[in-house]
Length: 109
Image (cartoon, rainbow, N blue to C red; front, side, top):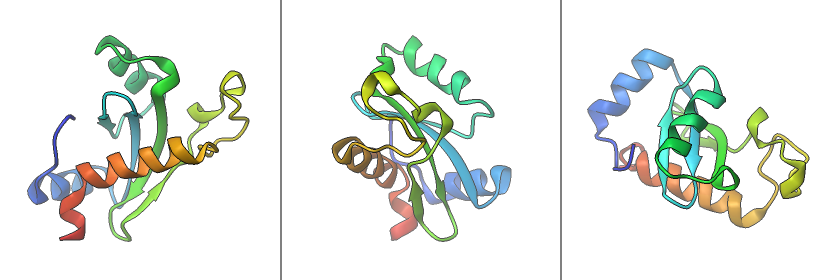
């Protein structure tokens, strides 16, 4: 998605996926893929949209508690000095959270 979600769309997402939704985010293009079963599927979509693998990171959001999670298996990237499932680089992590909060902004209103 490349725009803010409406409250009704968030409700539909919650109905479909539950309180926790997996996310894959292109930090450069600020695109978000919601709810893909496999991160590789979401990553493929973002790469097809012109994204670069080094800008694509995974995590999730707890829609009930409004907590953004920056942990995903796809984040294990030793070549980018990220040897954890958590996004370790503070700038990348902050950008991931900012983008997710932008798309789910209606949760905080």
